Each structure stands twice: as structure tokens, then as C-alpha cells.
Amino acid sequence: MKSKLCLVVWIIVAGLLWGTVAQAQTALPAVNAGFDLTGFIQVATLNAAPRPGGSAGQEGGTITINGRLIIIPDNLIVQMPASSFTWAQLFDPAVSAAVPAGFYNPARPVQPAGRTGLALNDPGQNHFPSYEVRVVGNIITNPATGVQRYIAAMILPAAQQGLNAQSGYINYIDYATGRFRVGGTMGDAASGTLCEINDPVGRFGLAHSPDPRFTCDYNNPTITTATGYPCGIPNVDSAVGSDPDRPLINRPPNPAAGQPGNDPFLAEGAPLKRFTMNVAGPGLNCDPTKQIPLMVGDWVDFSGTLFKIDPALGPGRVNTFVSVHTLTAHLGIKTAPGTNPAYVRVEEFLFGVGEAGNTGPTVAGIAQETSTRVVLVAFCTDDQGNAPGTKNPYPARIEGIYNPPGGGTEQFIAFPNGNGATNPELQMDDPVRGRIRLQLNKNENPPFNGVFVSNAAGPGNFYREYIVKLNGTRQVQLPDQAQLQPDGTPLPGLIAGQYRLPIFDYIFGEGTNFGEPWPPFNFHQFGFLKNGEGANVGPLAPFPTFQ
Image (cartoon, rainbow, N blue to C red):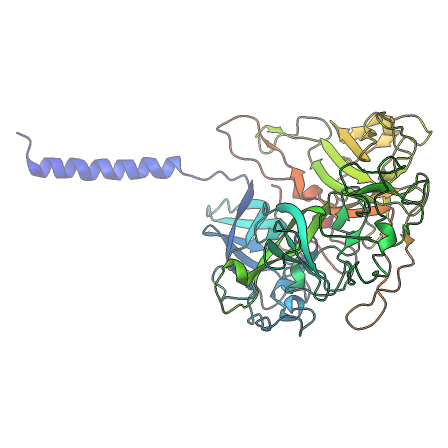
């Protein structure tokens, strides 16, 4: 019989050997690696002073997601659902203060000093204490110590719930408050989801916002019809008058059966849901410089943030409302072909950020597969040159895709062929709905007589935002000066004929051989990260280096 002492010694030795083997197996590679994390914001902190290379007002800090501590560099821009802020601005009570202060009763609580109000460890605020965030960056490993630092490069986006979306018919509008209900009994003020547009400047109706960090985009409208025409909640009940900024003439009545423009799905006299402005028919007298009034009976898809009416009470249905930052009304309203203003909205922009070609370079011996695929889906109110049911190789109204100027000059980066030849990659593939597609397998595209987007020249050729423009309408400021901001000053008109959007979907490279170390992401080829954005936002500090 084996003695108990020998058995104990054998177990101890085996344990020591196993520990040695385990340590050898878990040794970390010296190469850096990319990470892409999505989860709840558990803790968010702000540095008291800028880091080297940072500046006051651009301080970073840290964020904890699923127990993972991530460094937020100075100069990092946080993308919200329809707006963007610096990391420091998320901690500023003035940025999150309700607009107007007296609209909400009871008043919104003041954001505590040093807190965003969005983290799970923050005390209860205006809304619910669970916000998710997607953080993309690189894991930087110290080769001498093996210590890892997760350094963020982009946050896209920070939202209460990224996939939160609803749809239904508008069943009630409260014209005095700008609130509306969706999905309830028609005309019932108590049923359906209570909603209001998060609009601190009053672009799409009355000015109000429980937290302007989750605002709609009031310059590149995120409150539109499906065709891209800006719309909003009227301030005047259509039964008694017309809102000058969203006039009734922009929702003409349905003609009688058998008359031109009649919609068989609607009752005679009901506001039309599909028509073309200022052509023969019911939309002849519309004003294309004004918005479309949303009305009871319109179908809408919307996303937003769930708030409490009374922050001190529970989360029941009667104590909650949705602060809407994005809304698309199922209305097929178009502008007269070949005329201005015309409108465009972008529904999707998928962007591959690999090297030119499908196989990227090796990183410290790690083989990568990268993508340069580009997919753009947009909708336009003008389908000029397209007969119903036909396809035009390129829509006459698309002028091109630009990068925003930042601190420099706006750059033309993609366009229909300059000599007028057709371009099969950029086409209006659905003239009835005005849908436009751009699909490229590579970001180099010879039919464009040049390069669409290439990183061959190094930093500066990948951008955070892009602008899609219609020709003949570049930077046309609409004469919509009647709207007033909360301080009483005029609200400038919408910029027609273009749509500026951030990129949410970058396609990064990944390793081709399972079992090899995970490669880092190529943030050194993103000009807005490596070089900064204009005069006010510098490079990320510290930078999530490539190698």
C-alpha cells in the first residue's frame, strides 16, 4: 500500500509542475491586438487634467464594461445615436441639462459632479441606469512586463439600447406639448407609447429635450419621411389651423375616387401619404422649403431613450416616455423632378478599412484578411431621369460623396464618372421609392476615373464622417427663418441636397489562421485619430498604436 505521505508529496509536486506548465501556456504574445467590446457602462471616470498631447475640455478617462477597464484617450470623440460629444462633455451638467428647464414637471435632477449619469454605479437620474456602449480599440502589451492596457480608439455609439426600435401608427398628438402616441387606439390620449422628439432647438416642432446628449440631428435630419423629406410634429391642430413651419398644404387631401392622384387605401379627403410636389395633381401647391406635418394615422419607425416622467417613481407604463432621436415616417413624398430643393437621407454606410486588395499585410508574422468593401444605401426625393419600374445606371441628382472639411478643405472622394459615362456601382435601383445604392468590392474603383478611398498614402484617408450630395443643391440654405430657438433667435433653415453622417460600421481586418495571435486594428491609418480633427481636436493621447 502506498503511504499517505508519498501520495501527498506526489500531489504537491504535480501541482507545482502543472502551475509551471500553465504559466508557460498562458504567456502573452508581445504583439498588440484589436478589441471590440459591447456592454453596459459600469463605471465612467474623467481625468482631472489633460494628458500630454491633450488639451483642456478634451480630457479622457476610463470606462469599465463587463469588468474590463478601458482607457479613454484625450481628444476622443464619442458618437451618440444622432450627435457627437467629447468625453469631457458627457460629464458636464450643462450639456445634459433639460431644455427648456420648465417644460418637465417635476424637474429633471441635476447630474452629479464627476458623473455621466449613464453608468450603473451612478445614482438614479432622469432615465434608467443601464446604458450600453460599443468600444473599439487595441490591446497594448508591455513586452517587458506582460501588462496589458486596453486603449479605446472609437466609441460608436453610446446609447441606452442600440437595437431598441419600435413602429406603429400615430394614434394621438398633443399639439400643446409636442408629444404623441404610437400604437394605441386612434384618438385615445391614454393608449399607445408616449413619445416626444428629443429636439432642444425646436427644429421638428416644439423645443424640448430631457437630455440633449441624446438629441436628434437637427441639421442632417434624422426625423424624415422614408424618401428623406424632413418632417415634424405640428404646433397647431389641423382641425383649427396650419403650422407655418409644417403647413397643411404639404399634406394635400386625397382626391375622390377616379380623380388623378387618388389613393385607394385612404378615405376621400384624408391627408395623402404619397405624392409628388408641384406637379399636376393634388400636390401642385406644396411648399418644398417647409417640412411635412406628421399626422394621426401615419406609420412611423422610431428609436429613442426611455425616460421616467417622474424620476422619483417607478418604471411603469404610465410613468415613462420615449425621447425619440430617430424617426422615419412611411410616407412616399417626392419633390418635383429636376428642381430644388431636393432631399436625401442615408440609411446604411458599411465601410471596409483594409489595405487596397482583399489580403492585408502580415503584422509581426500574423496573416490577415481585410476588406475594402463599401456599401451605401440612400433615398432621395427626386428620381429624375427614371421611369417607374426602370433603372438608371446613375441617378442624375447624385453629385458625389465628400469628406467633411474639418480644419481644412472639403475633399471630393467619390462621384459618378466625370465624363458622363454610366457607372454600374452607383445606381438608383428602385426609382419608385427613390432608393440609391453604391456597392464596391474594393475601395479602388477604376470606373470612377480615380480612387474612391484608399489608405495607400498613409494617414488621413479614412474619415469619421462623410457627406452625400445632390448636384445643383450644394449647401442650399432654405428660407425657413420663421422657426425660433428657445432663446428667441431665428433657427437657420435646413441644408437641402446633402446628408452628413458618421460611420458606425467599419470592417476591420482579422487573422486568417486560427490559433495565431489576434492582430491589432489599423488605427494609424485613420487620419482623424492619428492627426486629429481640425484645429480644436488633436490626435488621440495615448494612441492605440498598431505595433
